[in-house]
Amino acid sequence: MTSIRIIKHESIPQAGSYEVRFPDGRPSVYQYFDDDPSRRSITGTMTSEEALQAAKTLARAEQDKLGS
Image (cartoon, rainbow, N blue to C red; front, side, top):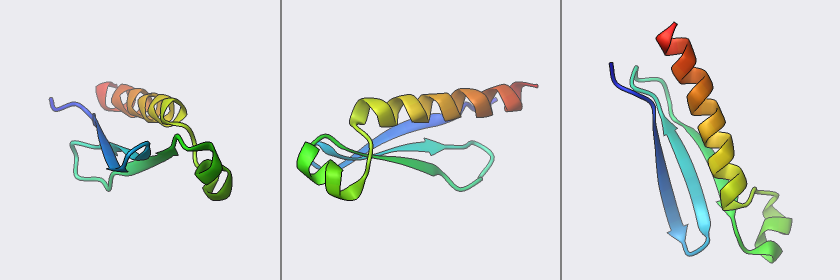
């Protein structure tokens, strides 16, 4: 059984996304982040820690569904 993967993408320093990639071919889900407070207030994205936690929560929930 292949597990769900979380892949960090950082397009510019302190900004990017965490990709939750599913082994069954479903489209990936992205949690976007920006650690620059001035940009984050404009874009409304999460901090990197918040985005990683959201990605982990989603991955665990989906992994539990696959394991059932």
